[in-house]
Image 1 (spheres, helix red, strand yellow):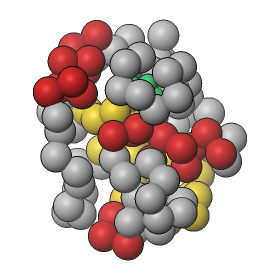
Image 2: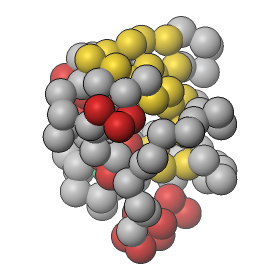
Image 3: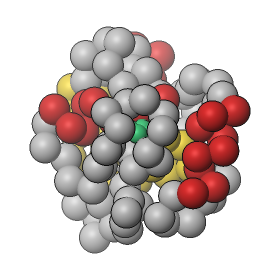
Length: 106
Ligand code: FES
């Protein structure tokens, strides 16, 4: 599925992410800057924070308590559309998803 990552300066990168990979992994494997992902996807670092595009209508994975809690500790402010990108699995359902990379992760 195609996932678009938009940086704070407006630069966007469109990546074809394999089914079953996460939005975080898609960024890391393709050199998208701004996703640090220190814990490698274990939902324990909070450095893979993204803002899901406000116009998103695609069904995203449910947010679990661990993710919800970690999102209070991110380096950039938590907004209504904040998610941990390692907790968003990619499938055809989310093809075309757009996420915004926050200003900082650490
Ligand atoms: Fe650490 Fe997502 S990679 S919380």
